[in-house]
Length: 205
Ligand code: 5GP
Image (cartoon, rainbow, N blue to C red; front, side, top):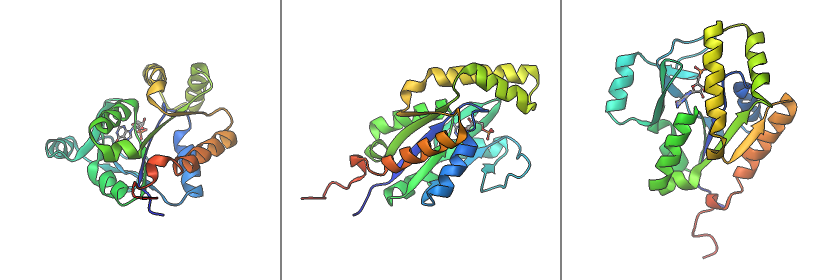
Protein backbone atom coordinates (compact mmCIF):
# COMPACT_ATOMS: atom_id res chain seq x y z
CA UNK A 1 0.00 0.00 0.00
CA UNK A 2 1.37 3.40 -0.98
CA UNK A 3 1.73 5.78 1.94
CA UNK A 4 2.21 9.51 2.34
CA UNK A 5 5.25 10.64 4.27
CA UNK A 6 5.48 11.79 7.86
CA UNK A 7 7.08 14.91 9.19
CA UNK A 8 7.75 14.25 12.86
CA UNK A 9 8.64 17.30 14.90
CA UNK A 10 10.23 16.55 18.25
CA UNK A 11 11.09 19.19 20.84
CA UNK A 12 12.22 19.16 24.42
CA UNK A 13 14.30 21.37 26.66
CA UNK A 14 18.03 21.09 27.02
CA UNK A 15 18.95 18.36 29.52
CA UNK A 16 15.74 16.37 29.11
CA UNK A 17 17.50 13.47 27.38
CA UNK A 18 15.97 14.07 23.97
CA UNK A 19 19.05 13.10 21.91
CA UNK A 20 19.41 9.79 23.77
CA UNK A 21 15.75 8.98 23.23
CA UNK A 22 15.90 9.92 19.56
CA UNK A 23 18.99 7.75 19.07
CA UNK A 24 17.20 4.78 20.68
CA UNK A 25 14.17 5.27 18.47
CA UNK A 26 16.24 5.63 15.32
CA UNK A 27 18.13 2.43 16.09
CA UNK A 28 14.80 0.62 16.44
CA UNK A 29 13.17 2.19 13.38
CA UNK A 30 15.82 2.42 10.66
CA UNK A 31 13.47 4.00 8.09
CA UNK A 32 13.31 7.25 10.06
CA UNK A 33 15.36 9.95 8.33
CA UNK A 34 16.93 12.61 10.50
CA UNK A 35 16.68 16.12 9.06
CA UNK A 36 20.13 17.69 9.40
CA UNK A 37 19.69 21.32 10.49
CA UNK A 38 21.91 24.30 9.81
CA UNK A 39 23.43 26.09 12.77
CA UNK A 40 25.82 28.96 13.39
CA UNK A 41 27.09 27.43 16.64
CA UNK A 42 30.49 25.74 16.76
CA UNK A 43 30.68 21.95 16.50
CA UNK A 44 30.98 20.08 19.80
CA UNK A 45 33.40 17.24 20.24
CA UNK A 46 32.38 14.27 18.12
CA UNK A 47 29.95 16.22 15.94
CA UNK A 48 30.36 15.76 12.20
CA UNK A 49 29.55 18.45 9.63
CA UNK A 50 26.72 17.29 7.37
CA UNK A 51 25.66 14.60 9.85
CA UNK A 52 25.01 16.30 13.18
CA UNK A 53 24.46 19.72 11.62
CA UNK A 54 25.54 21.78 8.66
CA UNK A 55 27.82 24.20 10.46
CA UNK A 56 27.57 27.61 8.77
CA UNK A 57 28.92 31.04 9.51
CA UNK A 58 26.49 33.88 10.02
CA UNK A 59 26.86 35.26 6.47
CA UNK A 60 26.13 31.88 4.87
CA UNK A 61 23.10 31.40 7.14
CA UNK A 62 21.77 34.83 6.08
CA UNK A 63 22.41 34.03 2.41
CA UNK A 64 20.39 30.82 2.64
CA UNK A 65 17.65 32.58 4.56
CA UNK A 66 17.39 35.35 1.94
CA UNK A 67 17.37 32.66 -0.72
CA UNK A 68 14.23 31.12 0.86
CA UNK A 69 15.97 27.83 1.65
CA UNK A 70 14.57 27.39 5.18
CA UNK A 71 11.30 25.75 6.13
CA UNK A 72 11.71 27.29 9.59
CA UNK A 73 14.45 29.01 11.52
CA UNK A 74 15.00 30.40 15.01
CA UNK A 75 17.51 31.85 17.42
CA UNK A 76 18.29 29.48 20.31
CA UNK A 77 20.79 30.43 23.04
CA UNK A 78 22.38 33.18 20.92
CA UNK A 79 22.85 31.01 17.83
CA UNK A 80 20.80 30.57 14.70
CA UNK A 81 19.26 27.26 13.69
CA UNK A 82 17.21 26.35 10.65
CA UNK A 83 15.62 23.42 8.82
CA UNK A 84 16.34 23.28 5.11
CA UNK A 85 13.37 22.66 2.82
CA UNK A 86 15.68 20.34 0.86
CA UNK A 87 16.01 18.06 3.91
CA UNK A 88 12.26 17.65 4.22
CA UNK A 89 9.87 18.42 1.38
CA UNK A 90 10.94 16.01 -1.40
CA UNK A 91 11.30 13.23 1.12
CA UNK A 92 7.81 13.49 2.55
CA UNK A 93 6.37 13.73 -0.96
CA UNK A 94 8.19 10.48 -1.74
CA UNK A 95 6.51 8.85 1.26
CA UNK A 96 9.54 8.92 3.57
CA UNK A 97 9.49 9.63 7.26
CA UNK A 98 11.50 12.65 8.37
CA UNK A 99 12.38 13.54 11.95
CA UNK A 100 13.00 17.15 12.96
CA UNK A 101 14.68 17.88 16.29
CA UNK A 102 13.78 21.56 16.65
CA UNK A 103 12.77 23.99 19.38
CA UNK A 104 9.29 25.32 20.14
CA UNK A 105 9.71 28.41 17.94
CA UNK A 106 10.41 26.11 14.99
CA UNK A 107 7.51 23.81 15.90
CA UNK A 108 5.16 26.81 15.83
CA UNK A 109 6.40 27.76 12.37
CA UNK A 110 5.78 24.23 11.06
CA UNK A 111 2.26 24.38 12.55
CA UNK A 112 1.71 27.67 10.72
CA UNK A 113 3.09 26.23 7.46
CA UNK A 114 0.68 23.29 7.81
CA UNK A 115 -2.27 25.70 7.69
CA UNK A 116 -1.54 26.68 4.11
CA UNK A 117 0.25 23.60 2.78
CA UNK A 118 -1.78 20.36 2.63
CA UNK A 119 1.34 18.19 2.17
CA UNK A 120 2.77 19.48 5.45
CA UNK A 121 -0.63 19.32 7.12
CA UNK A 122 -1.06 15.63 6.32
CA UNK A 123 2.49 14.79 7.27
CA UNK A 124 3.15 16.80 10.43
CA UNK A 125 3.01 15.25 13.91
CA UNK A 126 4.36 17.01 16.99
CA UNK A 127 5.97 15.39 20.03
CA UNK A 128 7.41 17.02 23.13
CA UNK A 129 9.78 15.34 25.58
CA UNK A 130 9.27 16.66 29.11
CA UNK A 131 10.97 16.09 32.44
CA UNK A 132 8.80 14.81 35.33
CA UNK A 133 9.17 18.31 36.86
CA UNK A 134 11.14 21.49 36.20
CA UNK A 135 13.05 20.85 39.41
CA UNK A 136 14.25 17.46 38.07
CA UNK A 137 15.53 19.15 34.93
CA UNK A 138 17.38 21.76 36.95
CA UNK A 139 19.01 19.03 39.06
CA UNK A 140 20.05 17.13 35.93
CA UNK A 141 21.58 20.27 34.42
CA UNK A 142 23.45 20.98 37.66
CA UNK A 143 24.86 17.43 37.81
CA UNK A 144 26.00 17.72 34.17
CA UNK A 145 28.19 20.53 35.45
CA UNK A 146 28.71 22.08 32.02
CA UNK A 147 26.93 25.41 32.61
CA UNK A 148 27.76 28.54 34.54
CA UNK A 149 25.01 29.62 37.00
CA UNK A 150 23.97 32.27 34.48
CA UNK A 151 23.69 29.75 31.62
CA UNK A 152 21.83 27.40 33.93
CA UNK A 153 19.21 30.04 34.67
CA UNK A 154 18.89 30.76 30.95
CA UNK A 155 18.30 27.07 30.21
CA UNK A 156 15.76 26.60 33.00
CA UNK A 157 13.86 29.72 31.85
CA UNK A 158 13.92 28.46 28.26
CA UNK A 159 12.70 25.04 29.44
CA UNK A 160 9.80 26.61 31.32
CA UNK A 161 8.84 28.59 28.22
CA UNK A 162 9.06 25.55 25.97
CA UNK A 163 7.05 23.32 28.33
CA UNK A 164 4.38 26.01 28.81
CA UNK A 165 3.62 25.53 25.12
CA UNK A 166 3.01 21.80 25.44
CA UNK A 167 -0.47 22.03 23.90
CA UNK A 168 0.86 22.86 20.46
CA UNK A 169 2.21 19.27 20.44
CA UNK A 170 0.14 16.15 19.81
CA UNK A 171 2.06 13.83 22.16
CA UNK A 172 4.09 14.22 25.33
CA UNK A 173 6.65 11.70 26.56
CA UNK A 174 7.79 12.20 30.14
CA UNK A 175 11.38 11.13 30.56
CA UNK A 176 11.47 9.88 34.12
CA UNK A 177 12.78 6.37 33.47
CA UNK A 178 14.81 6.20 30.25
CA UNK A 179 13.71 2.68 29.22
CA UNK A 180 10.04 3.50 29.70
CA UNK A 181 10.33 6.80 27.83
CA UNK A 182 12.24 5.18 24.94
CA UNK A 183 9.53 2.53 24.59
CA UNK A 184 6.79 5.14 24.70
CA UNK A 185 8.49 7.17 21.99
CA UNK A 186 8.96 4.11 19.77
CA UNK A 187 5.29 3.22 20.24
CA UNK A 188 4.26 6.72 19.21
CA UNK A 189 6.41 6.49 16.07
CA UNK A 190 4.79 3.15 15.24
CA UNK A 191 1.29 4.56 15.79
CA UNK A 192 2.06 7.58 13.60
CA UNK A 193 2.56 5.20 10.68
CA UNK A 194 -1.03 4.05 11.06
CA UNK A 195 -2.63 7.49 10.86
CA UNK A 196 -5.35 7.72 8.23
CA UNK A 197 -3.64 10.87 6.92
CA UNK A 198 -0.90 8.54 5.71
CA UNK A 199 -3.16 6.62 3.42
CA UNK A 200 -3.30 7.88 -0.12
CA UNK A 201 -6.78 9.03 -1.02
CA UNK A 202 -7.39 6.79 -4.01
CA UNK A 203 -7.40 3.71 -1.80
CA UNK A 204 -10.78 1.86 -1.97
CA UNK A 205 -12.03 3.98 -4.85
P1 5GP B 1 22.01 22.08 20.37
O1 5GP B 1 22.82 23.32 20.08
O2 5GP B 1 22.11 21.66 21.79
O3 5GP B 1 22.31 20.97 19.38
O4 5GP B 1 20.48 22.46 20.13
C1 5GP B 1 19.89 23.49 20.84
C2 5GP B 1 18.41 23.57 20.52
O5 5GP B 1 18.22 23.95 19.16
C3 5GP B 1 17.66 22.24 20.69
O6 5GP B 1 16.48 22.49 21.43
C4 5GP B 1 17.31 21.83 19.29
O7 5GP B 1 16.08 21.13 19.24
C5 5GP B 1 17.19 23.17 18.61
N1 5GP B 1 17.39 23.06 17.16
C6 5GP B 1 18.27 22.27 16.49
N2 5GP B 1 18.14 22.42 15.17
C7 5GP B 1 17.12 23.30 14.99
C8 5GP B 1 16.47 23.84 13.83
O8 5GP B 1 16.80 23.55 12.68
N3 5GP B 1 15.46 24.73 14.05
C9 5GP B 1 15.06 25.09 15.30
N4 5GP B 1 14.03 25.94 15.40
N5 5GP B 1 15.63 24.60 16.41
C10 5GP B 1 16.64 23.71 16.26
